[in-house]
Length: 279
Ligand code: PDD
Image (cartoon, rainbow, N blue to C red; front, side, top):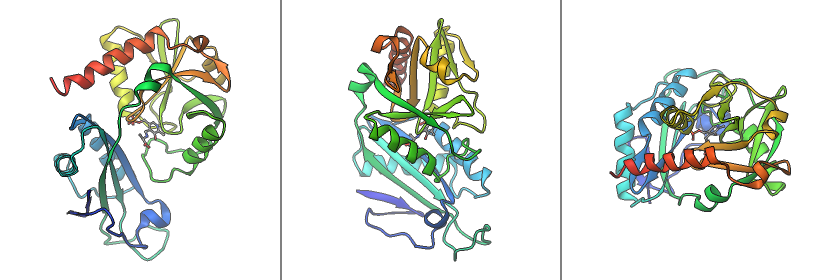
């Protein structure tokens, strides 16, 4: 396998410096882009978000949108990726440890591929999740490398035999440890507004478009944990999890443990969106 590092396609055991600000401070941002049957899915949207994330922390992205896409396509071809993901990371660069932004530093850019199949069984049967306090920082809109809050909450889920942790800040449901969260109530989809408390998911935007196309009301509103557990249907979304039904929360069954009709409708339209890539 080859990886891309700072302009070169190199072997995967290529080393990066201990002075990388990503290692020492988590001073960088990332993206995960999906590949279906060798084709990039919503890549422009991901790289637009990457550039926005870099701007929010005053890193100048060294590549344009089209350059990132070209790098991805080269990696897909050279690593012979059919179904998988591309991980993209931009850090501020290498500098002697000092908290403030160093001057004249060059960003480190890393891209690599993973072969990953779609989670088809879970998409059909749904997953159990837990809830926990959202104790992350207040700029969750930046796709930052600092993921301690996210990984600590994901670990709680795993330890309780669940697949995701839905996070709750001041009584309000924000998002999953690595996904956006939605409820369906009386035929309406509801999800947290895309502000600083959540990541504005690319899959979330695809779902929003599908909902508009299907005439399903889509409301960006806040709701609390009891509304979550009393919902008709609950689902999460992400680049890797797609439209993933939630069938139990902290042991409480949702829709008697079955995948509901609105989620099924979104899933079938999502499937159609993926297939349009090859059409
Ligand atoms: N995570 N919220 C958080 C906190 C996330 O980490 C993610 C994605 C999402 C969904 O965003 P998108 O639909 O653009 O993938 C929401 C990626 C997949 C990850 O960290 O692996």
